[in-house]
Image (cartoon, rainbow, N blue to C red; front, side):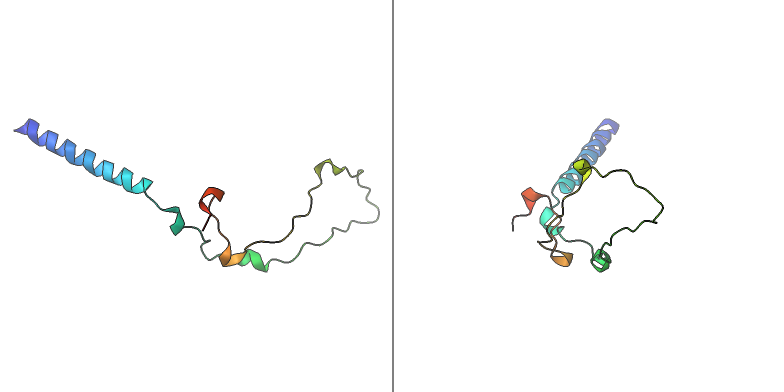
Length: 90
């Protein structure tokens, strides 16, 4: 009788664990594709040119590490879709 109760508890435990794991893997990514309401980055000031003091000399610039300008097109703010590319087709 005690062996049967232990087996029953083990079956319950394994069943509950299986349900928890299955529900965790079943999270739908379409439910989570917007930012959580933190759009304060949209109010940031534009970048400005760095001015140096007249008596400071800088090393010669090298274009190896120059970052090209990125065109500002696409969705921003609440319209921004943060899902990976293979999930973002609507």
